[in-house]
Image (cartoon, rainbow, N blue to C red; front, side, top):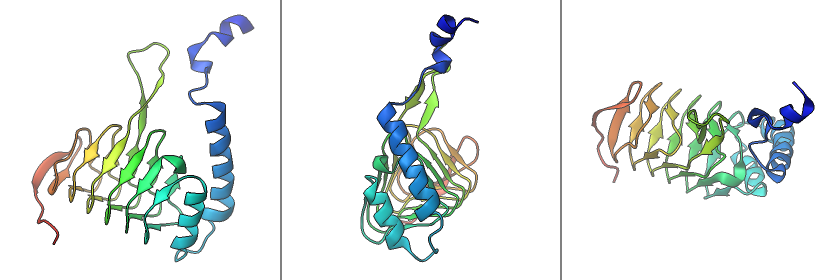
Length: 185
């Protein structure tokens, strides 16, 4: 293949802007050097670092040192949010997490995919919303564009492929409603 043909190959085109790639490179360095190495109880320090990179976090957020956040500037957390170790927040688009919500170990909030119907396979980003008092359990996945209602639970290893109604419990692949949850006071 010639260089001219290679430059027209849609798979070789960048999916994000140069400024985005530079910001992520800076964030990656801060993550490796300052965030990931911080002692587990230093939630305020990690919140400070995330805010330095544009995250909007309410008070008392507990983001653990091994949580992976792709783009802090696209993360909005209300008060008392917990993001556990090894949780992955892949957020090319905005992700909102409501007050008192929990994202457990190895949970995956996946904010982008690719358009499989387009031969150039472009990145397609969609916002995710996690409601107040919702719980994304260990190893559960929330797909792009999904809204998890207030108080909803996505059980261990479940995959949310459509919106989850408030105060419901979902499990499975794809997640199906198993029952109702009692409302918090």
